[in-house]
Length: 410
Image (tube, rainbow, N blue to C red; front, side, top):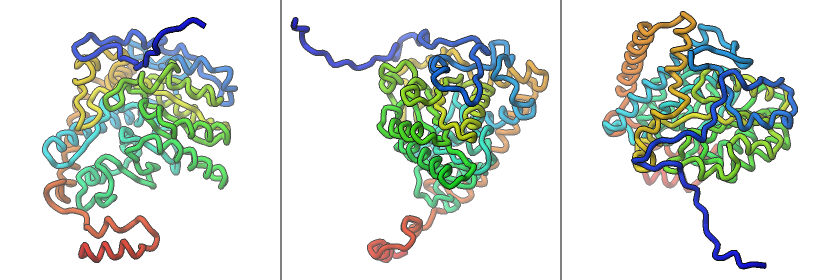
């Protein structure tokens, strides 16, 4: 056998670095309405190509077209627009609060608002989300009190989690929002286990798992797919592909699979890709997947093709690893602008009403912030009791924690 020479280690490289020209030529975008809508009980083997396409409803003219359109009324779409606008305004105020030292940490959803806000409207009461830190839209679209969210961010005396969770790691059983973990992939296996338990107990509730593109490289992601496919767990497996992990591009996690959705094919799981900046498309695909889960047809893997416009977090500087103008070049546009244009095209919205709504939402968010700050912020005002750190871990506090609590004088 001929000597092939020295081995070389391969490290994937992004298409462009800071200072370069943004290039999304590798993102193939099908015409809106061109991807078929299969029956709920379709054989996954017959729709393998859907793991490599992108389901879109809104075309460039703002019209809703194709077989995935028509599921939402004008009133429901107006409500969805307001949810996304609220999340974006909330983000801006909390990011500013972090810069002012009122909280230690924050993560924005800028450019990704449609994913969580639209998905939430496809769920039923009692369903459980196992989210990452960029799905606060699940709470906002479900009517969770904004003041309570801010209290948790500030870790103040009214924080429902008593200062024991990192800011933005909300938790609400009543609103189907499982506690967030900084180690994102753990949410996947827990979601599948929760869904299996629901099926074992003959309940009617389903689960939704959430993960980012970077964390799909972790072993928990693959373990979850094994169990979900084997036991036909009633779960929707969501992958939010926003092109970037904290400082590495998606190619580091994707390997040679081509798309993240394609990873479900080897497990026999129906796998779809959807335009994550198209509110109507996200809702339609979510409704298809949740209906499958409720019909005992098993899991669905959904990849949301979107873009993280802002930094990974308040402690990240994206200019160090991507061109500053890259978000402007993203071909799928802004989810709020696209839904706004659709509603204007339908004659139920206008630029004037949009401006008025922005002002109303700004006033509402600022008012909520004032109320939350009356309970304290990171460096001022009321704080949770030190005693709280010892509570809520064991049903009966073990002796060593009792001793520590006594030593702390609480």
